[in-house]
Image (cartoon, rainbow, N blue to C red; front, side, top):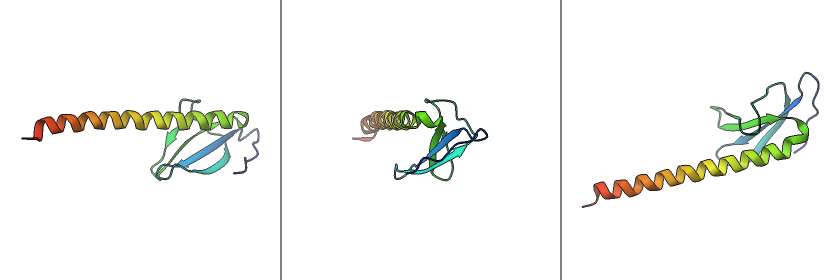
Length: 92
């Protein structure tokens, strides 16, 4: 995907991922800053991402992917514990 040119009015690159497919769907110049490498946004349209300085795009995308994997792993662990507890309660 081509990296868009930035301007003084839009100094950051916004990247968006489709939550369902996990694919990078958009790169665009923006004036919005989403708070750094460990931040980002989630939209109701099924996308999420972050914005960053152009020179740090790869590092920000890698940090986003790592955060996403860690988040899913934590969710799986939580669900596994809930399943174990449910089996204890509901099995005869």
